[in-house]
Length: 347
Image (cartoon, rainbow, N blue to C red; front, side, top):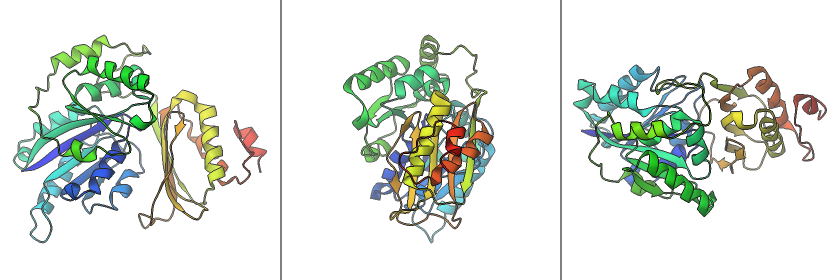
């Protein structure tokens, strides 16, 4: 039997960092990865492919809504690959969901499939929670609360960036929503080994009445009705390929422009870019209004030489976003455009 772990967590909470750290360890060498991307362009699988030959992408849809059948077919493909004698054995599959996925429909679909369960067994449901922004995300987004409520293992990420009072407040929220989960603290993926090699606990029934009650008791800061299996109507994704080489001045100006325009409506942004720099290959990412340090790659990860950028947020304007990309080529550090009109004056 091959164990599968379900790795969930809200947008930008550190799923990729945690899993990538594990794949670099000897303990992760027998692990296949299935990555689900909400948008049409996938990035995370390119990071994993540096350390694993068994990486599968399910893009342009969410596991809990539209691509469940593709997940089933991918798992059956992994089963067939694992049975070959000309390759090392596979003992684990990690399924990384989108940051907006509800884990419950995914679990129901997998555990209710008799054919799959002849070859796979459920390991852990792991949920990453951003130690800095997690409390706010829990109050604003039902998806985040669902992910926490269904976890057996909560991983509090970015603890090196969180103030002690932030961490204490977050732990109180998590204890209220899911008092039964194992909690692990992590910074830059340092807890990856202990998280993914943790013994599987006794799985509680999928009805989860105690956590459902705690979800209802935890107030949302918005009042629009959302069902447990429906993403907020105005959350969308936008992606684009880049035919130019950005500068770091330009990346900084572009991020400043996005934050000024979208403010808290911007949930997540990430990109693979070919920089005009001595270290040309970089992964960039931002969560909310926070832009994180880039990750540099030794080689370009695929045959397509174009850079690519993905944004997820509420009320995104594709035309505006496409126009904003001009900022990426700015070279004058004093330019800090706040609007597209100000950006026009920079050229």
